[in-house]
Length: 447
Image (tube, rainbow, N blue to C red):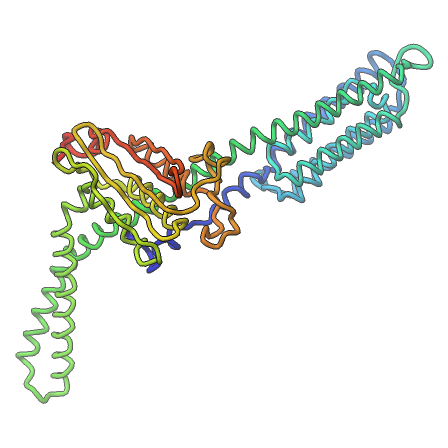
């Protein structure tokens, strides 16, 4: 496989932490818009209770708290652009305010007895959908503390009769438990769902980048051939002119040595371009088509000479050897599986291939420790590491290798099955139908 450096395995590792971090950065404009809705709703509720129902409550302090929220929104909207994304600490501060402000209003208007207490859940829900675990835990804990405080310390609930509404303490305790239980359940549930969605989205983005890189590297051969073709004509002209100058200038003249050097260097350039052209011509069919064994040799070659014996075997060959169009996704997918096997093998890896009239398959066997039982059911999921990332041989990766391999191979029409061998090691089986393996060739022909 084409590589950018001498170490094939290390150059195929990518850092995708940026994707995960970016997916957990909340846009400030989102919170600003939501707070405008809160300001409007709080204002309407206060006006309705004060001047439509005419129920007594501390109107001025309530409107003062609404004014603070309004002022904060105006400041944030004028200070930052709409596309600004908050860090975890900034999101924690903004969402904490979104708990403190409504908690203050509720404390002035009946505490936990006020039905609008449920709005304390909203900041925790927003945090659980967008923020890392530490921020989610902090916001949830603060919301629980605010709910507990409102259950014990508050002014009377606005009510038309003198003395207000007095609820039994047992009922207030039930309200507290209901709000807290709903808060914790909603936070955990939404965090898990959002985390899985982010994980899948991040891993798919990583897969697309890997495929794009492989396709770019595959295109370099064609670029070299095109460069050799385009440079051939002007270089021939330069060489011709240089030779004419060499014949025109007698030996011993000051410019004679310079012209001779120019002729030699132009001839050297022609040899380099000739090698590029001959390489492209000789490998043109190879670049367009790839047999099963050529595919295996291409993905196996970068992993030889790393202290692990790597053997290739053909266990069945019925009919002509299948040929497919050169596919960067297939090369990268099989390469990731071979790389994983070499990383964890103790002494040897065996790649077995076979084909018949209906199917094509490749098995990759290693003699390593195999997969933990708990991991077997999750093979192919993103961020699933085969062993502890602290293992030096695993390279501390993110567990994306197998996910990328399985995803790319499934897109090519293959079925991938990975399991432990009976005694020791693991086996990865990749199976295509013969038609699917050659589906990218014109006419779907096998040779």
